[in-house]
Image (cartoon, rainbow, N blue to C red; front, side, top):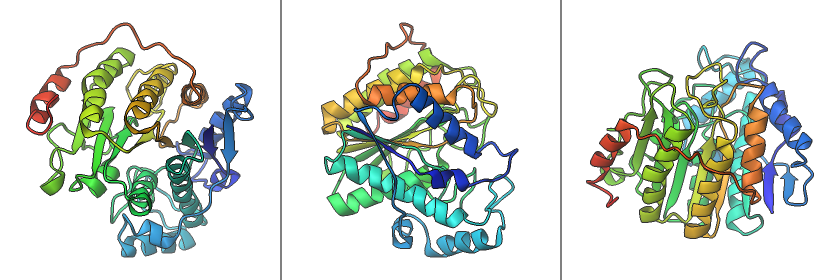
Length: 341
């Protein structure tokens, strides 16, 4: 059974009609899943989330930052120009974090085979002491810390597929060897937040456990297929995670108005298939996908439906062509110091 974690409350977070991270993103996904008969399928259980606690947030965020977001939510004061904080934001953000926690704990406990958390607001740009990029709290990071705390997990892998680098997730786990963070994103010289270069490899005990794959603008299915084959599969094979979390953004789609990547909607079927099969091989299938970005309303529903179909076992063919990216060769040379790939 695959869980879809969702609440109509997420639709109430409204940064403004002209803001890219608007309620219509989630509406487009839900409507397509219903149209594709994935919402009421016997293979899928739609489950409402429960809110996280302030103590949950403080597993990865400084208490002073949590209080700041709460106060800004009360007054409607924005975090920054891109991240407005309309009244009610704090409560809905708690529900989003709680949805990620519910997804992770439900999968690890055996309640579901896997899960897709359809959450708003997104989270991977939220650092320990600041938010931004439409994000307030780091949904995936809190989920990971809760799993480490409640299930004594020692090795968790995060695969970030958003077109924007997950600077918040990197910040939180940069010195943590229990979390292997792997991010596929557009070249940070061309896109917010301007970090996620191949030399950002972690520090202290976490050195070597932070891996960035920056794709040149124009990269598409053949480039991602090569990165999966050359980086994700061998790294996960060596690290042997007990759980895989995926920050899934739909903004690498070719139609996205904010980015310059060229993924097709079908890519989310075969990408998910690779991750699910690797999770089945390494950790009993324990994998959760958590929604991040994606702003092309005309195609994000199709991509999300393909992802969900792959979670329940539908097969998608990878592209026959794997396009070799020079940056991956450079990255592998850097990783050779830490991993025998």
